[in-house]
Image (cartoon, rainbow, N blue to C red):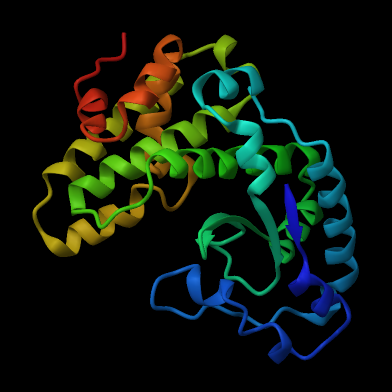
Length: 261
């Protein structure tokens, strides 16, 4: 992976916000919105420590469930080589890590203020970064085969379920093929599946907008499209590559027709 640390270097050098606040990332995280919140200079020591640790983790990064990732996706090493980790400060809380495409190149955005907060709250950075990088690089891999389009409402639900299901599954736990399924996960699947069905059938534009956010927004188990998809895939590990090759069109029907036994 490549690294773009131009923003962080300016922040750590205590340069004026104006020297990096107009970077393209703050304009492209959310369509038609400019997102920049002035980061506190007092966090620079924590941010620098976090930055140095993540750089070292990136150097030796291996996907969670690496064998399964290599089985499902083609061209993994090439794509990783061309992906760039862009370190930022100043993004709102919802955007601790995400993937963006800019001028035809894939960027994994990591906001170091948010990650410094995770360390402060006792989170282990190695596991956290391996989880995030696996999750976000899966999005990069999927985007190369199934790029984003101008979706209708129901197409968006299918696309986001497909994308997030694979990303959530492969970053969820190590050795996901041996993960023990229980009634708690069964309950999560039924709850998420019910909401997915309600979302697909919704005709009111205002409620559709809410479902569009809730599909992959909010608390982990409340992200109904992501959770229903992840758990569906967890029950179909043996055919994961086939599901991926078949693509996202018609994907939610597989989930809504499935009955967890």
